[in-house]
Image (cartoon, rainbow, N blue to C red):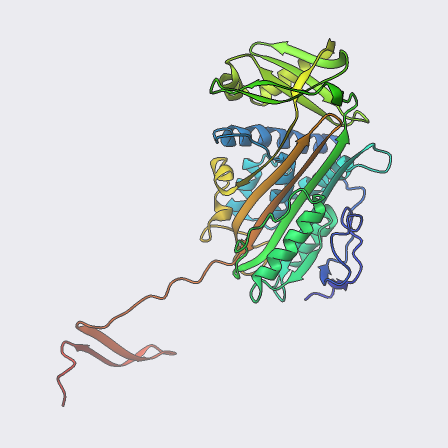
Length: 420
């Protein structure tokens, strides 16, 4: 390995040491470079990255909304995970990632801007809420990862390379990665990688985890929560716990064609939840029309009003493979063992064998707690199946000297039984 690499016994990467995600007994390979605390970027570039994430969020929602049941995902977690893959992507693979996820800046400008945005989002000691963003990389022991790839992950994502042996013990690797995810999400996403999901062909696993926990600025009155009817799209009504404030609150509100919207701030006012309520019978039509332009129209229309709000408590988790949703957005080559170009990660051929996302949310009278993880598993293309050749019919043969190409003997066998 390059002399720039060092084995660290104590990990002090941004967002990682605080969480205690890497026990000191584990071997971690790091770039000698620290995370850039003040990236060379502009507010305009950061705004462009945020706008790209918003556009990606609504385009991905358009794909996944067709599934049955509740939907939950973290666009920002997926953006960060795919941005780390982009570090090592080249050619058509890189172009598809940039276009599909709306990474509009060139790589040299994009990663500093995303770094600055992420560090600006992370909660500090002065914030009355938790918002933690962590990135990590596991790599096969002895594998020839490119130094530039490791440096970029260290400088802009605070991610070191944790050495692990997928080839000899993929199950131990899976357990170790799940342990990190469990800690990074405060125990809200346990067992993210199911048994057998990490195979011996794996060469690296990239993870992003986001954890959020905040109290409402205007908490609901727990004593006023009662079971009331919630009307499903099927026409059926079910009883669920419905929360309410103990009186009207001054909230930002908008009403337009086919919807009502209300914004619920969390303590500190840095983060809020915007609830979008389609008119009765307009749910499907509203969803289909919801894009970036409509979103901007709704958020621009918000103004402070006195609001009496009644809404349900809810708690659920969701998970999905990202292969098909990202494929629908044009990101296909990175998942194709014959087309992927991840030469910026290693001199050996790699592709994404799997990418999946899992999220959790709990909304109650006092607070919202949410977590998400995005995992990408990179592997070498499997060796091709052996070609079978059964010489059971007439054939030709040539005996030649290889360095000069001189043919020494040449013949045809019609019947191997003929002897002389």
